[in-house]
Length: 455
Ligand code: TYD
Ligand code: MG
Image 1: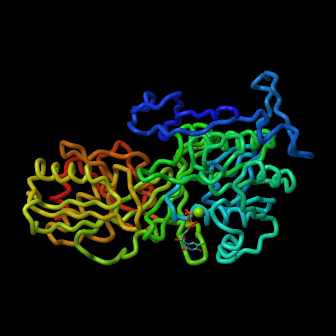
Image 2: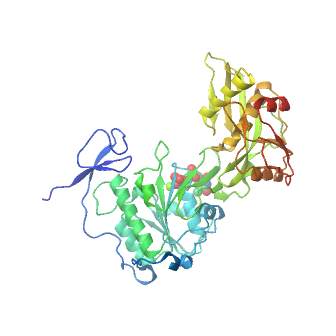
Image 3: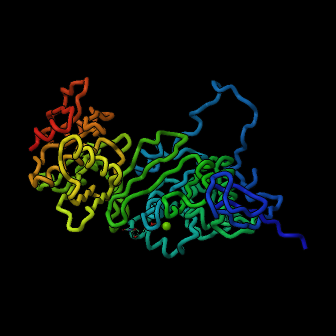
């Protein structure tokens, strides 16, 4: 009997080794090597010319002058889901492979099934996770009776490609890459070599037939897409579906996009009958716009290219235990500690003995540093127990010296504030003058000035 060939794979970065070793020399991670059986057959699963008709479009392998290449040859497929189109950069590119990552239960399968059901083309949804009945039940929930959507429950790539050649779908969806298995490799589904090989086969299929493929990928505990990092390098587009599972809002973000910008985001709301596209997010995120409560401030932030008004809530109270507690939801805890230090050193507030809790409402995680000023305002408002005017909002970054710094795209933020009925927006001094806005613009250069103005 032939000797079984095995290789050691790093589960973190996908590097291969002939022998076991304690640390991966490529990514320096300890104890990440796992032995996997590799036994490659000569015939690949997906071969050129396998499929009759339109699908067997061969690649032109002669060098061409760039000016002679016709980029208009393959227009993007409109998915009819505006938020999804926006994140993709205007629709699905034929022959592209898109990876959609996200935590379990966040709604990846729901999103893609919904996209699939609404597409006016023939789509094949391959699921290795759920039975056809389960998918049908979900499809009924999102309330569509689509004629063009085919469901296949299968995990072997060879069988999938056989069905694909029969049906010839215009879009192929795989749920999920971790369940796929190719015959050419003996290791179990979800192992690094399987993921790499199956993705390779799917990419070859997509490029040769100009069919867009969307693949779901699971996320590990530390928030990375499970499987090797090279998975992300192999595909054309990496999307991430994120949000707090206990809240209804979900954000779709492009982490990598070979055909568009990575600054766009799509916002959805998870309802009982599927995901709803949220076209005007600011209005829902600020629920109690006219309520005067201490510790609440509104920030004009940018999520990608879209302005977003977000409510920041702070609670400052005397510490019951010796060590004061600091907690932040949706905001970086280190940054909160920095803001508290700046408030103490530059503005003389003794918050060292106080518990400080910070919460960004709606379960959204904010990276935009321009939320800082609203965080400062909310903390001080709670500390003094004085409510801020609910018609005021804030947008600026706070520096270590207590200086207030301007953020990007101020014009867009100010216009959004004005559109939503805010009367005043507090920002950093800027060279431009924002005359067109209906909201009055007030600029501050130091935290002390803001404190004097507000309280
Ligand atoms: P799912 O798409 O299965 O998540 P994933 O594929 O990312 O693991 O979504 C599961 C969650 O979505 C589940 O907890 C229930 C919720 N959900 C709704 O709230 N409404 C719906 O219409 C559907 C289909 C799911
Ligand atoms: Mg799923």
